[in-house]
Length: 195
Image 1 (cartoon, rainbow, N blue to C red):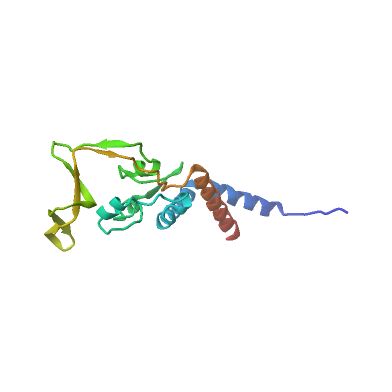
Image 2 (cartoon, rainbow, N blue to C red):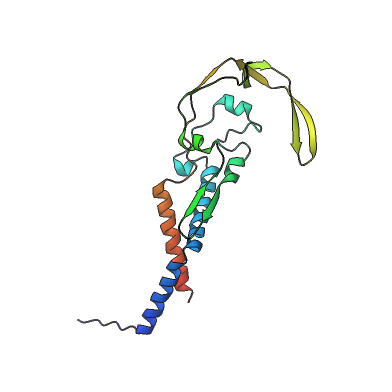
């Protein structure tokens, strides 16, 4: 049995030209990949790091000292998640955050020692501490004001911190490559199917 497939040379050349034109416009593709990775980061935050293997729960003392008493790691104010952005160019797309403390959370830290800057003592919110009245200034949409917090604080001359656990916020290289390939495949299918 013999099967013959005949295609017009014009149709094949048109298809190849469209694929070539599509492949030469890299920045729009990189932009789409950046959006896809940003969506991954957002889902990872909303699932407490489930896409990256899960984040270690916060210590009770950490939760006590948080503004909203939230037990969700890396999400007390929302500032860290909001700081992530994608920067596409014709050569690449970069997804990251400029916050100085992000690498310490992404990769974790070894144990470290904390000392007061100019003598004195360290103080941090702790349910086992003693009640202290702390006056602070509020600045916000409603203007300025003063508030007094009556939290319990622990005090020490030095603290030997056990270190931060790694809480991956970004996809691994393999996960990012998979997201990029899927995004490119979808874009090609859309481009080729659109004409």
